[in-house]
Image 1 (cartoon, helix red, strand yellow):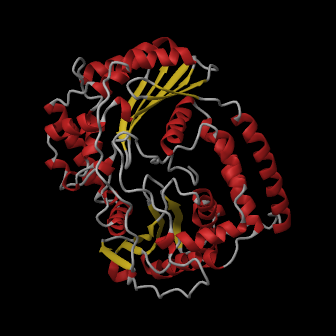
Image 2 (cartoon, helix red, strand yellow; image 1 turned 90 degrees about the horizontal axis):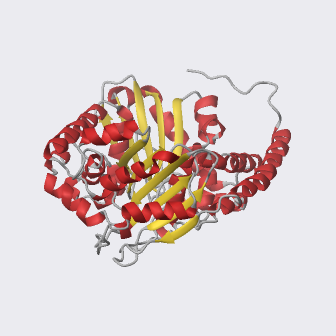
Image 3 (cartoon, rainbow, N blue to C red; image 1 turned 60 degrees about the vertical axis):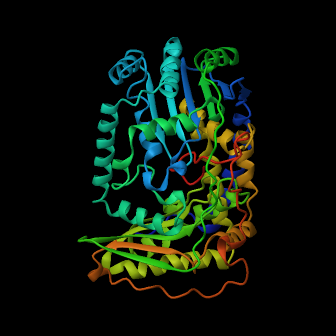
Length: 498
């Protein structure tokens, strides 16, 4: 396997640096100017709903995102998948509409209505044209407040979910990811896939689904973001009309602390009759509220999150031809999520590819990145930020995240500066602190007789900052009933920055 190198006419390092610095200066001057036009309003209704409103009258469309702190983080250990099953059933029938009636009503007004769960939260989203906004709000409020959880629908949706789980058992990357998360998160709820497990989903009863909804679905646990062709007065009136009678309640969240970082190296080899190997290597990463989040974002872009611009892609794939694909990510959630490097390679190249990953991790912990690398990462992360504001639906999602993270409504204006301020010293500091080439999990799914994976040797010592997460700030483990915590939502896993 070989890949062509850079074209002969590709600009030299000095020219690239000048161009990239120029782009950064443009992006950091232009983005805040357009972001300054985004002036959301924040209200708290009498029943505790946090309401975010952003007027965007350019198109006759209204997008709404309802965010509730009711993710798989709160699944009982033996009922993994409960939050996901609950969210999946919301639009499958209410106390006044059947599943068919809901689907027909949504189609009739040309709207989009969907609900899903993730690790920390669930969301229900609505996109509707302005003239049908009342009907849209009626449907959205109905599925959130009055789901019926009809036994027949419960079994139908459960069957669909189990089918998805079983189909994933044949996907090497999914097998590797789940084994990896099980190792690094240990007993923490993040170890379980949001969708649930083959052993746990059949055990979830209709009564447990209704109880989960009764416990966590409440107006004082709801962030409601409304973006589009509505005024502040109109949006507030809609929220009060359709959600105002929903009664607030006391919510007792389970006390959950952060996952405990690995204190050793752990390796799991899964034997499958495959022609290539799927590899995941990493450990517990950072939480979204960590003040080093932005420096880590830039660092990861350079290391492996920047696609064809990243060091891992350039060295391990392009220069050495060892992998088909490779990337790294930090999944920053309410608590520290995963830092993971994922790659696919020929089975016989697995050992060399793994050694290459560890070498790149050690390299970025040992010496400052170049000015060109830093400028290129900043140019992309700042320049791509406006793409997250292209549509009303994306803005509604981003607004909910901003509120959930407690980032402040001036985040649109501040984000480019957060990235711009990251220095070479910051990159080296966070690499030493949050990358740990001594304590990690390694999972390899392959035909093991061909891969013959061996435990990698220990890395040479780094002067300071080693020990990765040992001294990293940790969020509080408890959650107060009267004052919801400043917990975090991943905005999107499509790009390097969130």
